[in-house]
Length: 148
Image 1 (spheres, rainbow, N blue to C red):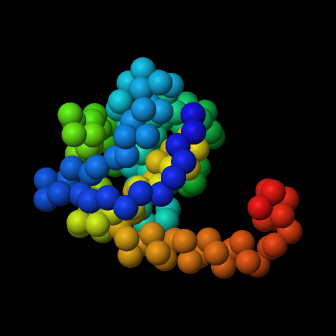
Image 2: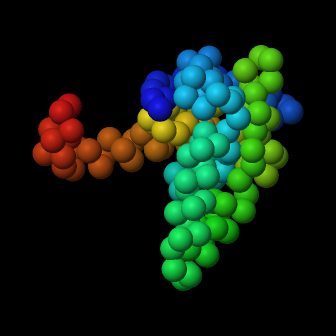
Image 3: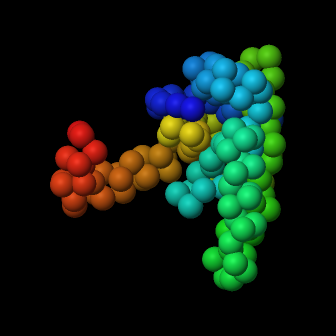
């Protein structure tokens, strides 16, 4: 699966977020389905996973020994997760609680990261990319090792 690209889109008052056709095509081709599971991420945004990938995540979490990290991950990322289907206009309806947590109001950024899709407010995405730039600038060898 290969979600790739950065798209500036909108979310309407009902919480319907426009997802690029390119990403929907990848889902249809690889999953035979255009549904995703959306949950919070640790960067102040949301992450959308194909159903099969989400199932793998749940299996991984369930297989871990009980402890504070597992409980925290379940509380923060599993509990608020919502399955979202695409409407005829290629939008998913994101629940109000998730929209509020991510600060999604009108302008959003939808980013493909190989096996997942991230959704941010424009302001939060600017903060995340700035942090990423600082991280990569601090270790130019790691960037070179990736082939950039």
